[in-house]
Structures are given as structure tokens and as C-alpha cells.
Image 1 (cartoon, helix red, strand yellow):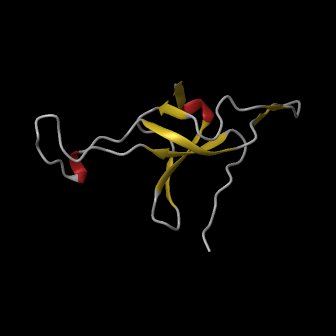
Image 2: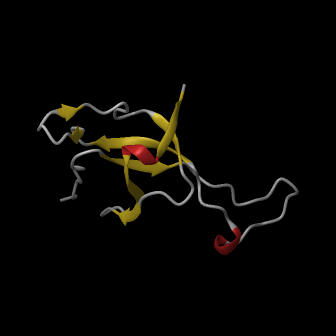
Length: 98
């Protein structure tokens, strides 16, 4: 039985896009030389940020959106299928790709 994660508040779960194993020049890149991806798909989103007055501000992103985020944003988490996911605040997302 697999585990699922439900983000709280203004947090989202993002599945980073795949990384190329070969450079543009044809050189095979080891894991240590690869840059962290900055693009991924939102797989889960929290309800939104709660203001001091208790109102919930809805999220601007939803499940299925492809987003660009800060290079070192979020916390890495592996699910039961050993798939790497990132948990980050909505404010770490720079934009949506259409």
C-alpha cells in the first residue's frame, strides 16, 4: 500500500522534470555534475495561505500545472516508489509554463 502526501497551507508537491544524462557536446554527465532541475509538474497542492484574520487565500497553482521554481527551493522527499519529489512554498514558484 503506497503512501500519499497532502501538503498543508501554501505548500505544493512538485515532481521535477527529467534531467539529461548527456551534455550538448555528447559528454556523459555523472550525477555530481548535473544541475538541479528548475522545472516540474505540480502533483499536489495545499488549500492556500491563511491570513492573520483567518481567511484562506486560494493557491494560484493547481495539480497538473508545469512550473518553474527557484534552483534550491523546497525540501526533497522520496515516496514509496523511490520517486523524488519536492515540497515547497507557493512563493518559491516563479511562474507557470503553458
